[in-house]
Length: 157
Image 1 (cartoon, rainbow, N blue to C red):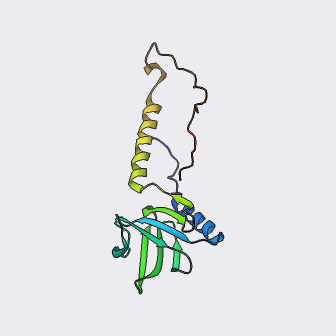
Image 2 (cartoon, helix red, strand yellow):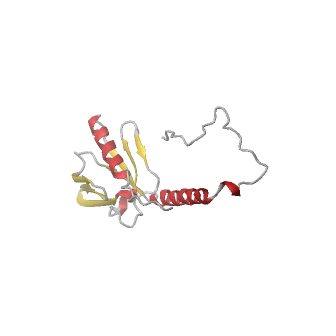
Image 3 (cartoon, rainbow, N blue to C red):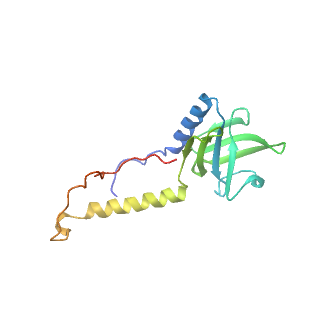
């Protein structure tokens, strides 16, 4: 695609910070789920389950929490031992309230990259297609009633 605008900053760090603040403002406990197999993840391996790890990141559970644009960094005690945890923002799979599960999940980075690449390929193919290349004899049908004619946003829990 020939787009001259600079690449956008990812939204994930902003959404994680917003959800964290919302959870704390509601006097609840923020938990994050991370992909512990991400090569940049520095986590206590003894607590990894099926390639994922869950952390309580409430102010009472961690010290020096930094929800940065590139990494989430904090110090916590695991089995009594102080441990420095460092997670690439792309490894964050979800942030939610312990009390009721309300929160937000994210696609694994590899899935979202391949989906974005597929979408870009489709857009390029559509952009390169000219009206003369459309098959003859087929009429474009009007949108079906009750069916959206363009992409829609849906809430996924």
